[in-house]
Length: 510
Image 1: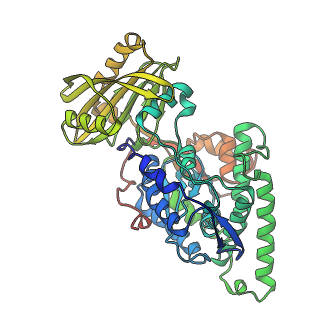
Image 2: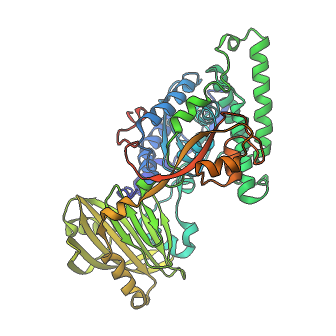
């Protein structure tokens, strides 16, 4: 989904730069600790950064699924030892399994994490881990920081670093959130398991989920990540082992002591697996079609109702806030963003230029098909150096789209024809194109007695790799399946917007 560009982050830097150090009592451990921000700072940072992340990443607009995740999170947060925080739990539109927390209580998990998790216990332990970071004030012990990502910086970073320089859900969240130290990750694991146990949830869900991540890591890299994984995080095998031991100790204590935990409800191990699968059934796998799809060089956006042809053989990157095309030689870039609402391209261009400090030249009113448009040229000073840019603003169905094209000085003649064809290709989506849009969705299928995953995949049209299918279902590839076991699969289906609701999740009502 292409959304309006992020508000300038420069104003947020002042919130993130804190003066001096102070000490406080850790709400979880009771020990005195050095912190780099006050609780008021945490709340102020949270309030400023949350809208930025939600705009950049995009939120899953599924009312029922959001309510379910928020309900699981709130059941754990009720047992948190830190009571001065209003916790919220929301799902971001990212296929990468990820979860992170802001210091004031906003907690985000990715749609990809829900796909990988296999039970409510696994989900609960992950959310408990993130609550642990907030409760123990881990961010306050780190150097909070942010990165200003304006248009000039963006184009320079793309052209100097290529596709890998583009921000994604991992890097964007990393710009706002301090990387936690190894001992903080371990502490958050322990807190998450404690919260899960107090809420009547199986604490071994943490170990099972971490084991899944370790197996997926092996699948992608061919071996387990070394101790330097994410620089400061404990290696996954170490965290799996610790989480397994912690779960066993906690369950043992709850059973044989008179600790209040022993009076809690019985642990939920497999009873809620079907309930969990019911909630995630039908969610998109990979990037949802609602965010736009590529058919070779043709970009189709069913919800914003437009199509656009990118230059042939250029590398494409579809992000929540923009769609980017990068020349094979990395000396040319095109991208499309939403720059505002209305039907006046000139007014939007002037407003944008003033905000970015740009001088527009050769302003030319024109038509793109039947749509009013304006083309202008400008110079951008980027981290990569000076860039010659041409921007075309187009009014379509109440939004103003900016088609931005840039090249190194002297490259205008080489790329101008490509840039112009790119802008001229903008069109409302045709009925034939719309009817052809499909997406992968998570479905579940019941196995037959003695059936293999390969046989089930062929029978159901599963498009996932067999090894990935096995991992996310806690199986081995060559397992013979018991009758009526519910297996997660990915099935390609025609795109429908019915499941997705624009209503915010309950936790968004803050």
